[in-house]
Image (cartoon, helix red, strand yellow):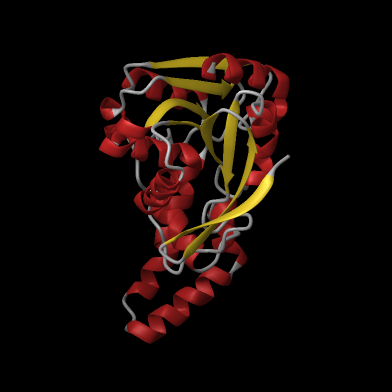
Length: 262
């Protein structure tokens, strides 16, 4: 049976659920998601792992941070959580945005000392291939902003605020970005604008990359790039599954994950 808990890091509360028995397994969700989405995975691994499924700050039951966080800030919080478990080593299972955090953490001395096996599914952090549609939106947005940037402080901010409220501007942004406001919008920009290829040579862990063949958020070529960059990484592809392979093919995902962690 899962239990709800709160971990506090620098006055920031992180909600988490704990379930299962055995070696600790820390589970991180993706952007816009929560621990609830990851709990089926935790339940499937309950016979062999004590899973800690976190709500990262700004998601689920964890409040937004007081200021915009970088990937390093999230990694600091997860590191503090792992330290609080007072275990020599933990395994980790991460999805999407959680992959960014774990790449950062595994490249640190702390990660090398205290993180054992790593399972990344649909992990983000590699520089994506951009379509012509992306560049069209990017340069259209720059063109729309240009006339307002020459204005002085307050009038400029007022004009840009009006621009961002228009339907045209909203149509140029990503669906994730357009749904955000305030501190999480800044956090999103900080996160997606940092590419993590440089961390890969510093990661010595045994890493399983478990990807859905039809993942269109973090396509297979990104998984292949991670596999090539990490010496002890192996890529396994689940057919007829997308970005949420653990929901699309839960039994197959659980069998592979269990074999890896055993």
